[in-house]
Each structure stands twice: as structure tokens, then as C-alpha cells.
View 1 (spheres, rainbow, N blue to C red):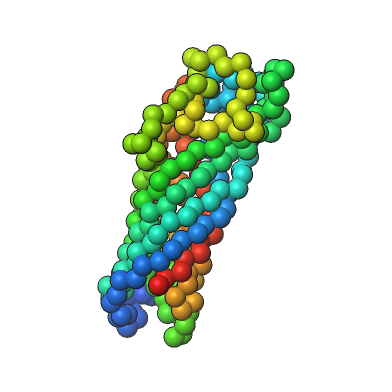
View 2: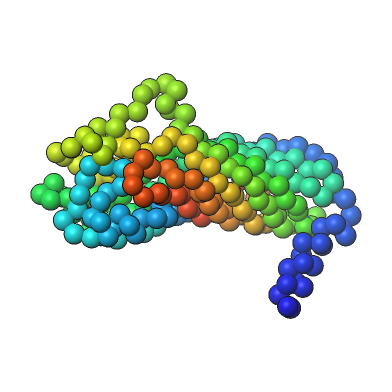
Length: 229
């Protein structure tokens, strides 16, 4: 009960503060953190590399791996409401442990690429003239825009029967049976200092991104650095 009361007060606090300056600002965003697929356990137990024709010698495990974003941001403030949108180039990874594919060697990870558009609605809580807490959340959409300029080649796909592993033992989604579209929710919380923002940003994928028997969904958590011009 105590936690519920505290949480409710935090949500109501912005509406009891003086209205803030209205403005629109543009910035550059760089993010670094970790990501993985949710739903890998079924593939690990079945000794299958998802979205591909590769079978491992025995069950393997998967885990988080570094991921990053680069892009542009626009932030608008209207009284107490903050709207922050960004367009980024995003690379996500899932680490593979002990995923040995016969005599060909070990597959190390799965990499997937998107151009992400995120829209976060939230607020700012001023601390003083220089510092502000930032809270927000909203939807995101991911799409591999490279398909507009070149076709995807799924030569490592489920029905291809590949006889060699990809370069660097990394399976790129665009070379296997993965979808080009992603959708989910985004939550961010952090602090602004003058014209810089530092925030933790969690992305929770809601749709299946692989053309295979069991669904996979993207999960990532990154630290954002945004510089507003």
C-alpha cells in the first residue's frame, strides 16, 4: 500500500508544478547497451539456430550482447507534456554460447538491423535551473529500410541447406528467414543537464520477428546520450 501511494504521488507531482516553457528542440542521439531475443529457449533445446538451416551438435544457450543506436531526436514541450521522437539506426544482437554446427565451427551470435522510429510521451520534473528529471513512454516501429534499395538474400534460410557458416560466425537477419518489421513499446527515465539528456531506454518487442516455428521478440536496454542544439 505504501509503494502504491508513493507511486501515485510521483505521477501526480507534475500536475501540481508550475507550467514549463513551451519549445521545440532538435538533437543527436547515441545509445549503447545490451539486447537479446526473447523466446530462444525452445530453439536452444531443439539445437536449432532460428531462421536458418543450421543445426547444432547439442543444445546450446543464448544471452545478451552489446547493442547500439545512432540517430536524430526532436523534443517538444507544451506546458507539462513532453513529446520526444527519434529516428535511429539500430543494431541488436543475441549471443550464442556453445552453438557448434558440425565440423563448420561455432556460431557466435545473431545480428538484426532496423531503422527505428520511437515516440515517447511524458513529462519533466525540474530540480533547479540546470537539472530536470525525464520520464516517458510510448510505441516504437522498426523497419529495415535497406530493403528499399536492395533485395534481401536468405541464402542461410531454413530451406537453403547451407554448407558453410557466415563470415565471422555471425548470422545476419537479412541473410536468413527474419522479418523486416518490428513493433513494441519504449520506456525511458533519466535526467537532463542543460542541453544534454542521459536516460535509460528499454524497448519491449511485441511481435514475432522470425519466420520459423517458434516466435522470437526483441528486448533491449540502452543508455541514451542526447545533445540538443
